[in-house]
Length: 155
Image (tube, rainbow, N blue to C red):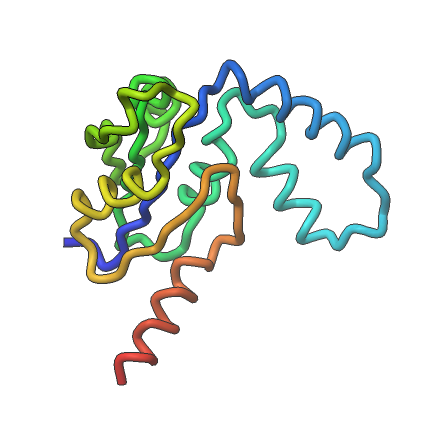
């Protein structure tokens, strides 16, 4: 049983989002100056350089964690959309279809974020749940720091 369940609810479509991310990537390169601290610059480049899928920066951040006792649950209305990218990572990932909601019948313009979060929580097995957004990236010790803070609060 993992200590931390990372839940990532998303319904984005890569083909719609990736062109916008490529614009951001080229914009970052155009505005890069030596004013950025080296750690920040390394983080941006390692997580966002040459991305092919919008989940890639987040998955790269998770893959680099020093704390390994976790699972990732990605809840997606269009789960097949993320299948191509999750197979490239070697840590516990559950890619699940968002549970049915009456809002689904009204069309894709109706966001179901709460339903998507609930779907991920239902499938989580960890003692601690950390909700994460897609397109999030962070340093390599983030899960360790989260666990340490949670452990201290239990004392």
